[in-house]
Structure formats: structure tokens, C-alpha cells
Picture 1 (cartoon, rainbow, N blue to C red):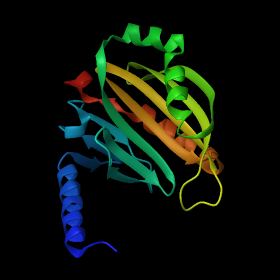
Picture 2 (picture 1 turned 135 degrees about the horizontal axis):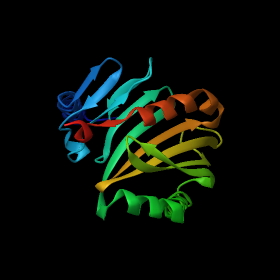
Picture 3 (picture 1 turned 45 degrees about the horizontal axis):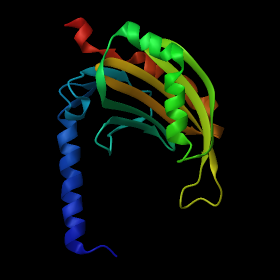
Length: 195
């Protein structure tokens, strides 16, 4: 049982985070506009939100946005990069297969049977992106057995930042959610191009 004062404190913190994040997110014409968002590290952008999906503040330091429909999630993450990477350097890195190695290294200890399904180069608002689809099984505490998930990620080197557009769905929903994830990823507009 949670102590009443701890409950009140947590409620206040959650309320303040929600109020704080709404200051930086404006939803207009099915787009969520992120301007001066503290987690975005100076990247101002907008993304199209499919009808029926909800937009929430990410619950981790680098998760700018969490867009969801039931058990299906699309997140925008922005991390500090180790150095400035040009668009040409990003293309070379993507062609080398470095992203796939990084994902497998990260997933092998966290998930059951992680597998890369495909990896291709794409363009997201004039930035080269590495689009990687993988599958894995994962068992949550309330589940009787592991559930197979499909994870779709777009990695974008944005100057000295790494932007990850990451989706996750149970495999049984992937046929339905894939077009929406793809559409969201390709709807991103980085405002710095148009100022």
C-alpha cells in the first residue's frame, strides 16, 4: 500500500510534468507541433497524428513524445550524439551495417530471440535515415507467456544528435499498425529547414 503523502507527492509531480509538457506541444490539424521542448534538445518539429491515437509526454529523459493506440506505440527519442555527423557520413555509416549491430547488441540481453527482419536506407525530411525492422519476444510480469513484437525504428543523425523514431506492436497487430507508423515517420517536418 502506498503511503498517502507519497501518493499526493507523486500526483503533484505527474500533474506538473503534464502541465509542463503541454506548454511545448500544440496539436493543430492532426499534427503535434513541438517547439522549444526541453527534451528535444533544440530540435523543433511536427508530426502527423493518426485519428484515434493519443499523444503523451514520454516518461524517460530522452523520450520527447509517446503516441499510442492501445498496446501499439510510436515514440520520438532524441539523444546527444558523440560528435557531429554530416548527412554523407550518416549514409556511409548506414551502408556499413553499424546500426544493425548496435540494435542486436542492445536487444540480445533484453529480449528473447531478437532478429533483424530488414534494414534499408530512407529519407526523412531530407535527412538520411536507417529503417530497421526487427522481431523479438518479451514477457511482461502480468503475462503467462512471451508475446512476439515487431519493432520498427528509423535512426536519423541530426547534426550532433541522434533522433530515433521507434514503434512497437504485438505481431498480431503489425499489419494494421505498420502503415500508420510509416506515415507518422514520413510526416515529420524539422522546422529549421523552413525558417
